[in-house]
Image 1 (cartoon, rainbow, N blue to C red):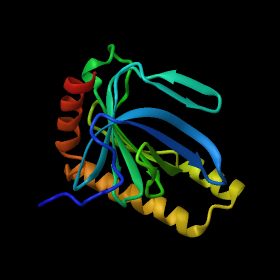
Image 2 (tube, one colour):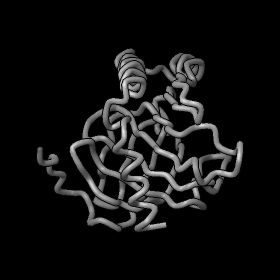
Image 3 (cartoon, rainbow, N blue to C red):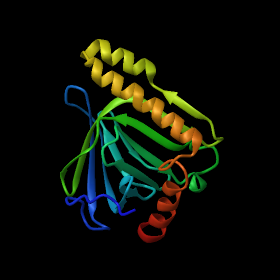
Image 4 (cartoon, helix red, strand yellow):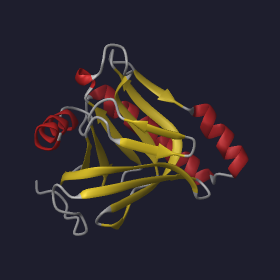
Length: 187
């Protein structure tokens, strides 16, 4: 099957800024990546180890290389981490999936989304966990999240959890394959 066309995607190797906000326009994570291709699952963005990520109150450098899948329309972003490169005991998650609104390509070099608090992770020991339910409840009350937004985040978390546990793509082999190729080409 041919991948869906995404006419505004950049060429492979092009820098892409990823900007995530919280509900109400509050800033969240911002960082630079490299576009390494697109397929039926979405766009793949690579970050080598040592990449800078910033949000209000935090400025960090990544410990390992990672690749993030920006789906065509699904309400999440999935980041696959090269845990084999991590110093012993320094990284807890192999896969970290943020529940978000569907991403928007503002320009070929800028993709944005709204972080919806819930996260699903695959730990290094193979456990699948749902994180930040308390944060979603707090923010729903404090910021007046619409019911439809909360329902989308909760359903996306259920769907992602099931897909990870079942090894359904893009949570099977494809993300790890893409990460290995990107590390060889861009790290």
